[in-house]
Structure formats: C-alpha cells, structure tokens
Image (cartoon, rainbow, N blue to C red; front, side, top):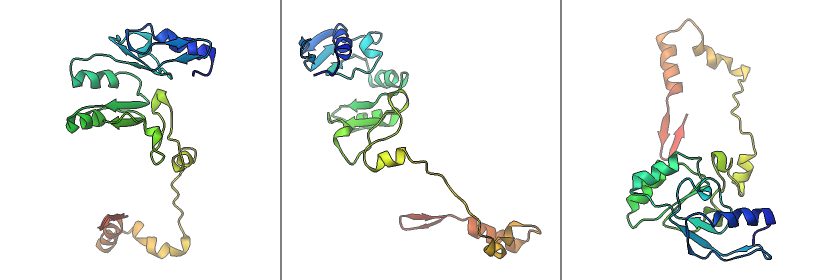
Length: 186
C-alpha cells in the first residue's frame, strides 16, 4: 500500500513507461500497486529519471556490460546497484566500476535487510550511513586532535635548529611507519 494519494498517482503514472511484463494492477481506493516489472523501458522515460519508491522494476536493455556501467556512471549515483551473473568476475567488475550507496551481487535482498551493514545513499540518493553505530558515526563530528605537552619539550628538541646528523636519524626513526602483525604503528 502506498502511503499518500499523491505518491500513489505519481507511481501509477510511471506504469505508462515501457510495457508491463508482470503485474501492473492498481487499486486507487486502497492505494495499492501490484509488484510490477516494466520491459523495454527507454532511458529518457520518467521512470528512469527519478527514484521510484514503489513496487515497480524497470528493465532497460543494454548491449554489453560496458554500456550498463556507463549508464550507471553518467547519472546521479543510485541508492543501490544490483548485479546478477553466473560469472563472479562480472559482478566484481560492476562493483569495482560503479559508485552507489549499497551493492548487491547475485542477491535480491536489499542491504537494508542486514542489520550489520550500513544503509544509506551517496550524492543525490542520500548522505551518510544509518543503522546502529553507523548512525552514530554519521551524525558525529570526529576530529583529529594533536595536543602538545610542554613538559616533554626536551624530546622535541630534534625539531629545532641547529640540525645535526643525530637529530636527522632520530627524526627518521620517529617518523617511520612500523608494521607488526596486522597493526600499523605510526
């Protein structure tokens, strides 16, 4: 059931795009639109110019994978990209070559169904990630802070002239990135 008359009429009007392959039944009194698949949709039709927010799936035919990726990349970034293929390298290529709020490979479950994954868009499809700790992180301003304690000034002497070979070696040692097992120590 669609929540408002205005939204129902907007989604119902989208059913005029392409050809109804499955579904298409509507009931204005109940604001009901059956799950619908539209075939032969053209990229300039209204359903391809906006987010649907209704039970309507438009099918746009492309000639190859590169054309599909190009179609995705030259529009506002979508809320979710779904990729289905028997070849895992094709799904991975779609994942690697597109940008979206979420991604589903060979799965029709929206990432919102998984409570351990963040949900949200990117660009025009939304900002930030929501759910659990992701919500907290989205609405929290994390800032880097560097506080210098003056009682350790004798250790900072290597930063000041005159510069010597000893000071250079100490700076190089202090600025080195150290790796230990799975940790990076700065």
